[in-house]
Image 1: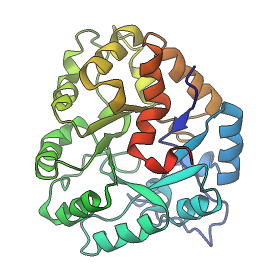
Image 2: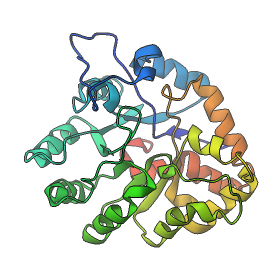
Image 3: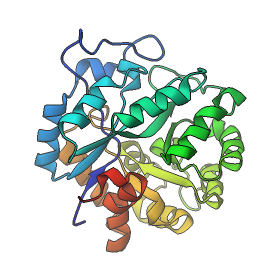
Image 4: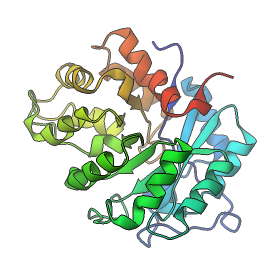
Length: 285
C-alpha cells in the first residue's frame, strides 16, 4: 500500500446557497451535486476514514460554474489538506486576470469543462485563438490544466500542446477511451498516441476502473500497457467523489485493487507522487 494517498479529483458542495449560489455550466445543476452533496467538513471526515492525506479539490462546474469561492474558502480554512483546481471562462477577455485572482486564493490548477453531465456534446472552442491568453497565463503561473473532454477533441488539443509546450495537461477520466475490445486496445489508439507529448498526464478515476473490466479488458492487461506507454510518473488517481457514489474509502479500495498488478513504485506514483509533482502545494511541509 502506498505510504501516502493523494486525491486529485474530489468535489465539494456547500450547504449555504445564499453565500455560494448555484450557477451551473450548461444551465442545469448536475444530479450528483443536488442529490448527494458533500461539504468540506464531510469531505475531511471521508478522507480521514479512507486514509487520504491531501486532495486537489476540483471546482464543481456543474453546480457553481465559474464561481470558485467555496473551494477557495475550503483551502483557506484547511491549507494543509487542500489545494484547488479552478474554472474560468477562457474565452473571456479577462480570463488571465481571473486566473491570477484564483491562483492568489490558493487554487493551483485550472480545469476546462468541455463535455460532461450538463454538456452532452464536445465543445468546439478548445483551440480557439481566444483561449491563447489563458494558456499563456497557465504557462506563466506554472499550473496544470485539467481537460474534461472526449477523444473527439484530441486534434484541437494537439494544436495547443504544440503551441504551449510547457503547460502540463491532465486528461480527466483518460478522456473516456473505449477499452472493451481488450489488448492491444486498438479502440483507444488515439489516447496512446498522445504519449509522445511529455506534458500529457492522465487521471484515472472510477470510470477508468469500471471500463477496464468491461468486455475483453482486464486491469492486468490495461494498466501495464498504460504505464508502459506513459510512465507511472504521468498517471494520478482521482476519486471523483461524490460524483462517483462513495463512500470514498470504497472508491479508493477499488482503485488500489485494480493496480495491484503494478510494481509498488508505480503504485506510489499513481497514488501520491504524480499528484505532488503536478501540485507542489500538496507536498509535505
